[in-house]
Image (cartoon, rainbow, N blue to C red; front, side, top):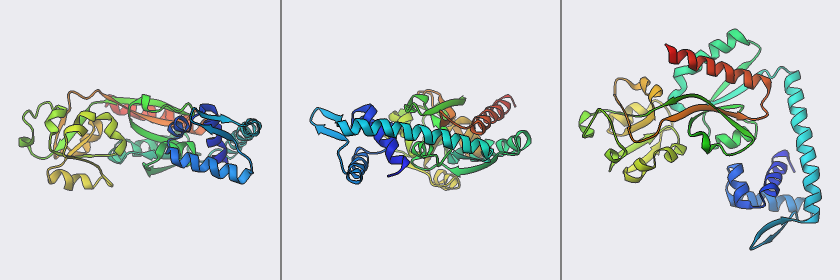
Length: 286
């Protein structure tokens, strides 16, 4: 039994639904059921009664829930106290591939000037980045998207800036109007994105495009665009690829580029978030 299993059990008990709990935890229903079954097997008693109408805590499960909440609350307090005692010397930040060069160096410089005791570590966005935040493998995630996607009450989304989505491409003959693009213009085309979750932001393009794939490294953009593929990303990130043509997509709402972090984050994490906001504000004014 571990802290992760207890947290998943608590969420399941609160939601009274495997499906709703799995959505909140950003894992599959089958994975959650397997975890609950394994926990019940280890404990030697059933936590939930299952029926066609849903799930309900057993008397033993209700008693276990009370204890589990106490354990996780004590663990959160202990982690917070130990982190503060140690100065929380490390803050791990996940970033999207396309935006890594625009503001990360500036964040490192400003953090070094204002709070040198905090050491930053940057890693390329993992596929299960929100779950990594909940599991404390990440402290902050730079997240281009829509704030409403973040539905877990344990996570906080702070907006850094809003941006139009643009297309980076090679040949002006690819589109009928190269001043402003529309989703319908991408019919039968190969599209590339920074992140698979971006598909939720461009449903019209996904519907008509020949293919929509995710890049693995920033360097792939040059070869893909040179071969006729269309790269979609926020306007501010698009400046990295100015040798190619960059055109906004008119019928897609502006997206919010922000940071996601745990609601009960350490003071150091919240300090870094404020520094990130200040860096972006300075860049916008330049």
